[in-house]
Length: 195
Image (cartoon, rainbow, N blue to C red; front, side, top):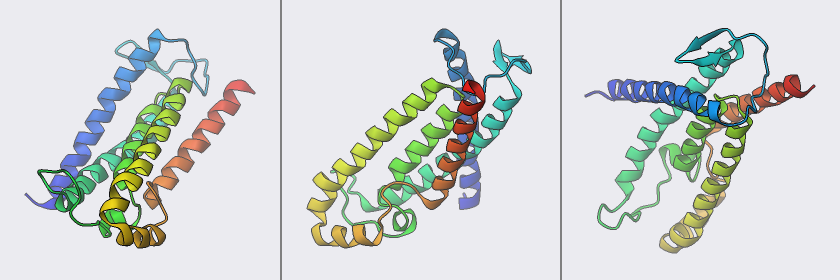
């Protein structure tokens, strides 16, 4: 099967997964106190008993892009990652410096964060923002621990050089645009909700 077809398949998996999880999260949010940003008065329509507003469509489309791109990258990064690992010990046999790893030292952690960021941001909820913060702390901790306890021990000199060359720890360059978009949406939503 060609790489383009596989990539389209990964994108399809990402889009379908995002849509299902979006509605599941919105359904579950009906059972906790209402802390939505971008408070709006008029419901646009309902799907499966979930009220949707015009701003939800904007969030849905933007976050669908974040998550779908993240899922595609996750599959591709995993493929790169498995080429360097020993199947028995699950430890790296060589230091990855090309592809995604030439742009970020831990692109998989950054990609997990972008997928979660897109999914949780799409809920337009303060609860989602809190979870995003917690996930960031956990993933940053994972990458820091992996560097100190595994990579610097296995590749002491090579990893120090690599770390100087690739200063970006987790986020691929495009993800910074995604984060900026999410921050702008959040600040706008908080402003229009509370002021």
